[in-house]
Amino acid sequence: MYSLFRRCPAALEDFKAELKSFIIADGQKLVRNEGIQNDELVRKLIDFKESMNELLVKSLDKDQNADLAIKNSFENFINENEKTAKSLVLYLDD
Image (cartoon, rainbow, N blue to C red; front, side, top):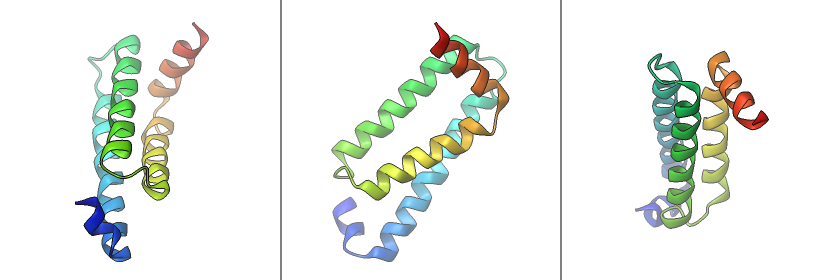
């Protein structure tokens, strides 16, 4: 499917926009879930990022623009929430 989108730059831009929306929406669900503790949140965020990296490699031909879209999407929802920043700082300090 990606090879078809790649042939049409406008379609590829639409695809990247939808990918960004998906990542931000799912990430915000995790970050805003009050029932998830810090350690579990960090693990879920890492797992989510790894799954997006796997998608990038296996399905998106390591496209640099898709990689940037994924990175920007994660930055978007991680930086908007104080809980996430604290969780990641605590995790990185261990």
